[in-house]
Image 1 (cartoon, rainbow, N blue to C red):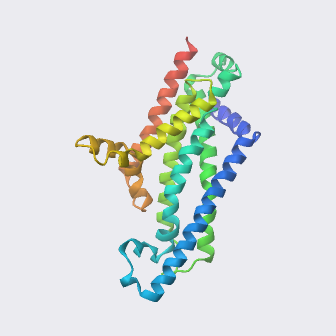
Image 2: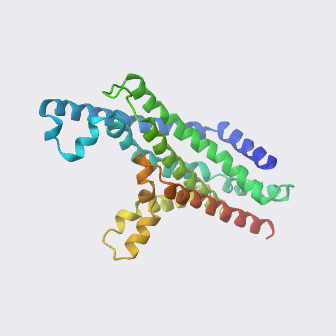
Image 3: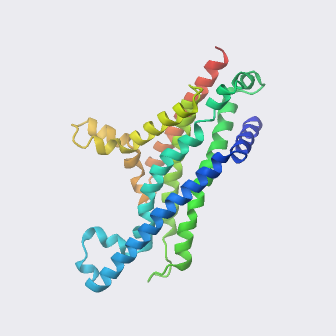
Length: 267
């Protein structure tokens, strides 16, 4: 495990000594801020309308705008998931592809380090960056918590927010694992990133594309869809089945990456 941690530290130093991490941090916060401001503005508009008309006369889809958690933060989860589907592959595409392009992969393979330690080290380094990227957006709930008001006392339901963040983080971890596996198969970072983005967006949106399909295909695809699996967590419901499923995706692709690296070590 010591070797894996050493590789993770090396990966982190690479991330923070190149513009990649800072560009990703800025993009994540900037795009999320844009949608946060828009969501907050829409929330205020709906609440002003409700004060004039009364909540009883408001359409059903606007009832969630009675509190800041459902009206402002919950809509951000969908935005963050889509951004993560792009950001995580961008962060993972260099993990092995860069080593191959720079001709340092062979040196890495001859080092007294087991393939599983190499894979876990690179994954942990990438996971820290993904977690940091997503963690920066906690700024927006904190702003609402400081300045927001609620009749119940607390401006936000933090249990709901933390479960939502858990869902986004699990998805990001899966994106990273898939991206790392694809990166282990090619020396082209761009190709690894594009393939991973396509795969992760497909697994996220596939449920909507198969609504007219026949059973049992529709049920099977619906189960495999990240959108279906993460719905409960995004609503603040602790869904162990969803956690196990998404975590299993990460473990499965870490295993595939290990097999890929091990095969290339002896080829």
